Length: 634
Image 1 (cartoon, helix red, strand yellow):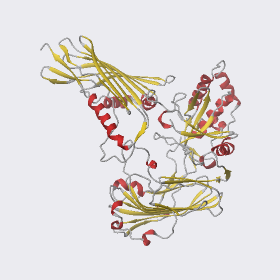
Image 2 (spheres, one colour):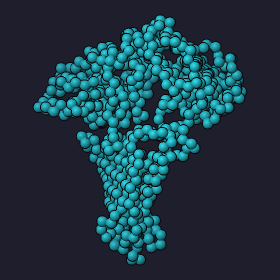
Image 3 (cartoon, rainbow, N blue to C red):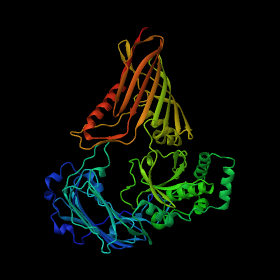
Image 4 (cartoon, rainbow, N blue to C red):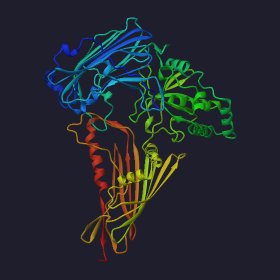
């Protein structure tokens, strides 16, 4: 479960920007219109820190949308709850010549729950307006003013927020009349950005920032674009004040005010755990049993109550109700473990397959999810407590290999979650195919998946049979007249290995060429990365996770066929990985194909992209090789 953040969309002038400046499309500098979907004409953010527990935020953004791909930048919204009050909100729409065509006032905004499901509890809501355009281009002007008692979150400044969006002007102002200590980090600042602030008050202005266009396999946009992140040395979270300049102090504050005393369990539950683990001396095995006990007893729902949505439910309430969010289920599992003498740490993380880390350079409230760390001698055990199906000590690509904050009684600590190496992310396929004299075939294929690949595939066992067949027909879609006859799944959770066994058949295997048949050698395809051509490539190349794919195929041919030509062995090794391919006859009427593909994770300069693209294209070419068999009795 992800912790719901309070997203502060703010700006600062109550004077309509449309009255100050000509909003005609013709007034946009030509260089800002090149290869873009939208242009930020002006964005203004004013944060007024009135006291440790009082803050006002005003935002204004004026954005010109050039085509349908830019519509998402015109959505206007504001989260609010009992501690964030919307004082004013409106949106105006202008046509291509800069004339106002529509105005939406506060009453026109939709008001919905701030979370996405109905089986939950939350005091977070969203006031939003999703404008449906009738023509392009158009311009929106959005204004919102809020009051907040939470100063634990100070909104960052990132003038370039999305791909294919240029910025004409963006302003960020933080007024701090009480002179509360600030911690500020900034990156990718250029001569297009001015700073006229001081140690306690900030004032940044960006002008004429060109757009970045998305390129496949590139690092996050934040890697290239300017940003400023801010935190207060003294802050308040829903009336609970804190002071911290180090992660150790900040973690201790979180433990004292968010976690301490919320781990008490019913006596019967503790007794049940003692019976469950009786006679087991191995700590890891005991922890595994307790984790599986929690999985079987609870289910996940989203809950955004407590101190700003950050405080977990009481462990006793989770035990009684049988549900909780990520905070609650993690705290509950932690309580279960510690009742049996096993120490663990509440860990705050940014979850998602893009691998976002806690920014250790600025001490502040961060993260959107919570997992559990169980330190053991020689290894760190990590538990995803919201899943009822994950194996013990398995994270997958949702929380792997990123910096997280451990919240401990004696303070916070930044550590890194498990990295799954290329040698651990393994897909291994074995297939035996028997070819008939009429080019029909029967085959049995097995695929085992480990590491990150395990987490990507094991949920298929829970979907209905028809959907499974549709999935496998897509996987094997290059085979003519395919008929799936049997599907068997084996989930070895302890080994974190998922096995699929398929029995299938088909007709017209291969391609005839006179008295010869060209036989494809890739029943389970080895998929390379998508590598479009860029002229030129402008962003660096990043492979987030490596993998190893091993494919073994045995083909048996009938008596009236003979093996004529087999492809030569290939062995490629470079900085990006390797590809090894060989075919050999293992009997008079049987040959074996072995392929091994290794993709390394890493970050490379943009100049290396062409070499990587050539590597991928070479693999795709080699995957399409054929064996030639001849018909000897016609």
